[in-house]
Image (cartoon, rainbow, N blue to C red; front, side):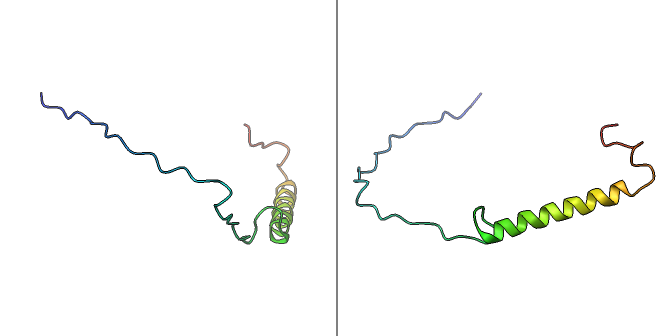
Length: 70
């Protein structure tokens, strides 16, 4: 039976750099990111849609007899 045998090749470690020399790059804020006005607006819209969905479910005649866990 001919099976392949994996070989491990040594890899050199990258040269150590001083952490103070590396320029810091900050990601730009994206729309809807937590902590931004857009993120708050999306959460408020999510809450409004959840409340409206719950109101639609409660308005049915058999809401109390039918559950999601049955």
